[in-house]
Image 1: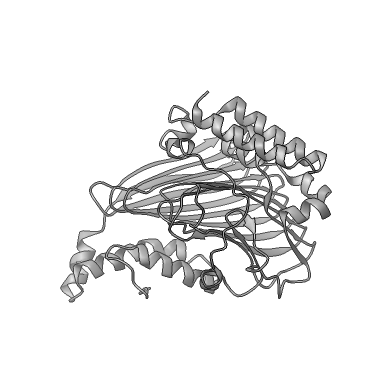
Image 2: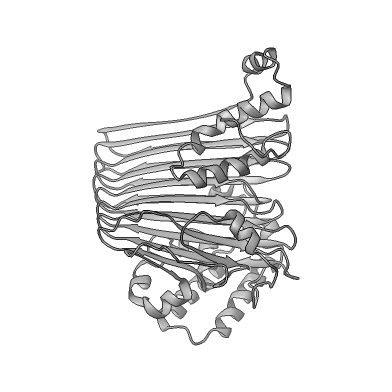
Length: 441
């Protein structure tokens, strides 16, 4: 057993011993996570699912949960990041009541810190926890389960249509003396005929080392609609591993928009299972790397029943010596006739040393389907650059404009205008040529 794995097993064991008062079902869940992590260990590049991503920089560092959040002042940072509307804020893995506000929360929506939900909504929470985020599929999910203590529980009542999004903001303070491990778990249950939007935002201040290991589980009832937005803009020295797991009932619709901008090493997984006919799933993603960043994206769509539709578009922009990876899998099971699925990955390399590995994958076991997939890797169009420069636009500005035009298809799919503006602002700061305050659409 490696020293790195032993460290995390010891951390989880100490955490569980320090929390003996948890309900039996939760203690059992944590113990299962610890057992699964001990059995499997952390992945290496010999594992096909992690072929292009070496997690040794995470495993070799002594990340651990902190006993208390930092006292550093973060109010201004939260106000800068937050959208109008209700929000829960977490700092260094701890819920911050002072920075949170549920004012204006729609009456049909319930939002609680996970620790409160464990006390008040045990049956509903236990019914969903681990339902799709299976411990045996990913050691980082097992680690999250072993340390389960923080996060949020979101319930949308049957028939409720929420007019404003719920925001979950996870911050690293950068002020802790030791490397910080945060393990948030977000659980979302949307009742039949409901509609809601959820924004997960991950950010932080430059400073101490941090590792965020997040898991989100979503269960959609019949004809439910969920717009899920994830914006990962952590410091470039941070580490981030996260996964979203959804189960969709008949005629439900999930729209996932994932933006990966920060982190030294960041991996984001999105998966959904169609459990009822007529479901629809839209996956949009944008990853933008620079310097030595490594940004890994993995998606999986399981067409387990007939007459479901999925649309997937992921784009990558890589500069410097950064590396991006995309592995998307669409599984069409034997009985899933009349499936309509498309998957596209496009990548723009802005330097000679940037690298991307792309692997779109279709596994079709039915015969009456309409499926397509494709991938492309390229550089800025020289003719387009010449056209812009011939009209007096400097080369650096022309490159920024063309790069933003490439990314804008994914950014433009964000229907929440304040969030779209925030993504545009953060994206502009990462385009070639340095930070800009405005973006030309």
